[in-house]
Amino acid sequence: MFTRKALFALLLTLGVALVFSAAPTYAGDKEKSGSAAPFVHVVIFHMKADASADAAEGLIADAHEMLAKIPTVREVCAGKPAPKTGIAKSDYQVGLLVRFDDLEGLKTYEKHPLHVGYVKKHGKNIQLDKIAVFDFIDQKK
View 1 (cartoon, rainbow, N blue to C red):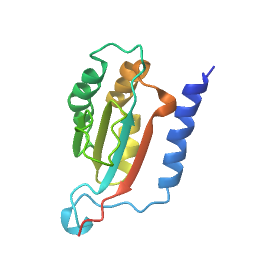
View 2: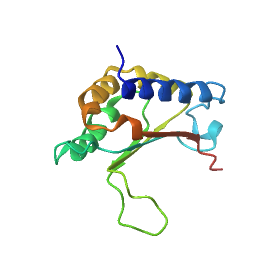
View 3: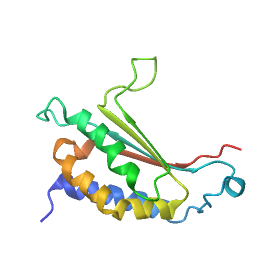
View 4: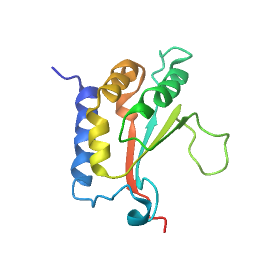
């Protein structure tokens, strides 16, 4: 049986997948797509209040260690918020950016055992009701 938070996370993931299922896919070839790995997946994490002091560091380290090994992943950026720069939000603990060649790459990533293991390992420390996911196509020419 799902908890409210787990159900919310599932619905959010399905909603993102549904919205982008109609998006065009792009070849990984720079000449064809106009930029390297144009499909960008961004996740903003808020840690639970009772998460250990090193939970955010573990989330970041494992993003580089685990997620970067998934075959469809082209780039992983993960870290804590930058020092306050003005209007940028900094009320979260970890930001994650992952690049793919196309939507199919993201779909493969979501089902990959390393991603599933990452979510299972760190999900207990994340406020699922505050997770924010953004997917977009980099239109650099």
